[in-house]
Image (spheres, one colour):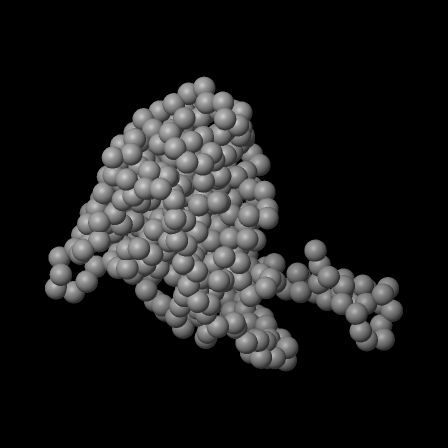
Length: 437
């Protein structure tokens, strides 16, 4: 993180040597090596015991032996946690003052009504891409022309458009067109609606390595602009966003402003998103369909993955070497729910010999040491964690809590080398600011 902006996590499928003191480099390295060896000598068997205990297996073969080793292992864990806490206190980490929220950055539209705006793209299957955009002219054509050279379009595709109402607001025409088949790792130039600007996209690679950018709770503030500038300065293949996009919160023109703000990046690389609580946009007493704006504007490939809801879906990346599951924290997830049945079937189809990487994204984190939103993901964890554990999911990304936090591999609140790593990445720059405690 730099300049106070949100944290951008680059996930692609050094230890510093501090100065100070009077120890010579050779003595310092010798002491460090001895301390590391001593720590490993004690820590390794303790971790092995905890993993065996989590699986319900005996570590020593006897009840008394397990009781004794268990007491030692848990004492060691408490000691390490205490030393870690003491280290942070001695470092006076609590003196860090988090920057305050930043004002909204509103993006106006001053082009003709037929001019495409809010352009963003998403993957559809292995070789296709969905192009989505908005026009104020509701009769503008839903067509995309594209090719491999600037201004030379050798193919075209047509799609559909929809509109939606929210109180007195009526959206422009929201167009969705699927183009392809496209070659992997290839740059294409395209134009929407036979009007306006030319855009350029690059398709993801068909093999590893693949690089994802992961951001959550983005919003549209000065910090958001900083986050986007960090992303724009790097090279990556796809962006993953675990919920809370525009923070429109019923103010529908903010959806339009958000689409214009992210267009430079979202029109060039696929943006794969799932919903957060700020996409719900329901009001007490008034009957308004939840997620109306989100579902209309950000259509994801749910049908292609067998899901009947845009709130949860999955897709393959890198030719199937990575499988990404986007779960819905605000869709029913309990026993007998449609999302649960879909997830069981989706995970059952993953062949880990062909797919070494299995990633999950959701909005409300299952593990969280911040006071903000404490326990809000617990019901979903209890309902679905075992399924992710049995499938040997590698990493779970979440947002909601406006902070960055990374856990070790964990299952059912205990360290477990076979469980996923949990990462909270909810500090993209939204108007609510950072989690403070």
